[in-house]
Image (cartoon, rainbow, N blue to C red; front, side, top):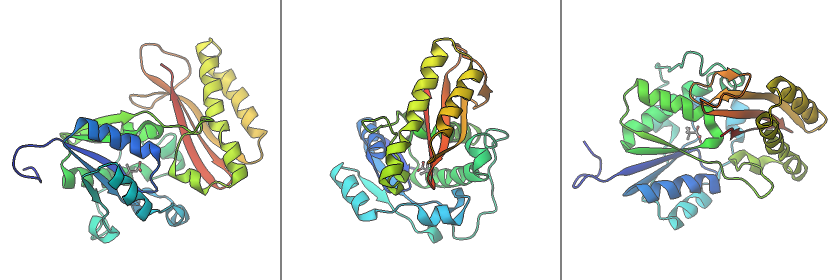
Length: 268
Ligand code: PAF
């Protein structure tokens, strides 16, 4: 059954946690170009935060978000309360055997179970034909594609390239919590990715690149790296060398001051 009745309309879903920026708007633009109706959801999903502090500090700007979405011509904005999405604490917990235990999964235990739960709920409620996610959260995209495949959701997942500031910093809702000095230093994440990619494609060994890159970052007092890894984009297994047969990416996570940021670049 389709929620809008009448002739079947193509529905594009853009799930967000609000604090919208142009990265989100790129998802919206893609959805509007490819669908009859675009539904944006704004919900700061408590089950995907592994600390209460991170959940409480997540930036919120609902009035600005609604104005942005209105001027972009979004058809429906769904802003549920926690009690609506979680009328009781969920007993179901979704795991991804390995995929959710490395990189983001390792540093944010339970994060992907929470993401999968809310995305599954949103898919059931909105019944989209297509759903849009940003490449910045590359591992999340992989997890969601697995969710769709394993649970037979009839949804096409589109990954939209990251949008960057002029200096290369990937747009993120968390950027607005950076102080001026942290913002200035945060660009090192992109610089390290660009450096690592160039070196890798020039034939340097991944081991040497990691050592060099980690040592460059460790000279910066404001930045603390959590991981820098070369991964196979399909299953997020770690790689130790370039394999031109499979899509690969370099992924980084680091704290800039108290703010945890992630970024990635595709190798090809
Ligand atoms: O990428 C996000 O903003 C969130 O993880 C998502 C997909 C909206 C689920 O809460």
